[in-house]
Length: 394
Image (tube, rainbow, N blue to C red; front, side):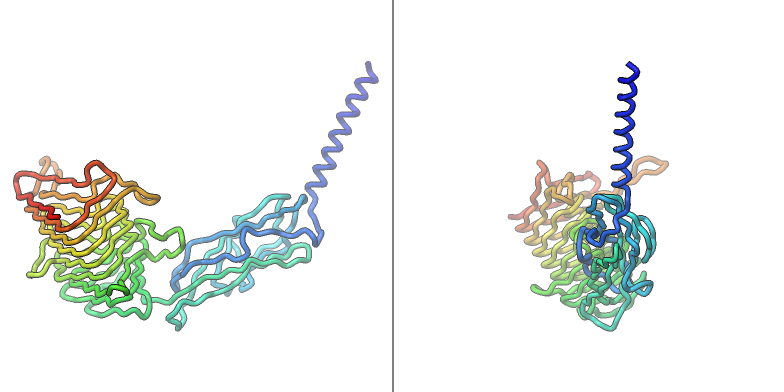
């Protein structure tokens, strides 16, 4: 019996030693030049980045496909500290590190961000660098490239009368305001890029003069692929109480929270906003919001809005000719509210109770389409204290 027990323990010991030897062998670091790294991409590409504005971070993975640990002697940006790129290597915020080990068949992440300094060029330009890897006498690299563009920058400015042309994009950071009794004219082909949290305020007058094949575009300033048509990247265009005689023709307004908001009735014979041949799309909330306002719209398309496509609150005068308002759920929009909402009052609550302020509503839709996936796409919210007039003709 003792011999059997001794044989059993001897076998267990040999098995344990064998496992330890194998484990140690797997845990050794390879020094063979034949053992190299592999990468999730050979070129990391940033879409257009405006000069002096940082981009989002992109990343790639560094993989050790070998059966033993591998030690990377050095990882560094080829451009060093003067590079426009910045690295985060396996959780370390640094543009160069040494002796980084990767276990067998494992990976590490390298995050990359970029800021492009302005130059004198008006057209897009590409800026290159690379991340270099030294391992077992081998040198490997991942190329970094970013398309950059100069722009006209506005940082929270109040502007007087001026005219914009399509020589370079216009980037708005911390909002912009067209002052009272001043006119901003935006010519065909202009591209206006709005930074997160920014709004295009108009106290005075805005004239957008796009053309059939050369529209004016308003959108967010994040141009990476996954920000395209992403609702809520900026606040929207806001026509304030003193604003008047505004015209928008052949414009595309997208990715805002509210595409266009128009406050208060007109102060001249012309509508407060005349909107023609324009598209409002991919808004987080409403596409077109009028609050006791005066809007004329012709040949416009409003679609893929997070709430209402046309929200006509607290009365006002509205005329729509040959316009389409359409909504249905998609990858970025969950369609839950009717396409068109109209109300003839404003509600608020205080210590005295509920209050309803009346205002007459007059709205006409001629040769228009109101379409969506809900049973009812028309929200008519009326009270008897004021008029509630609307017509649908063809």
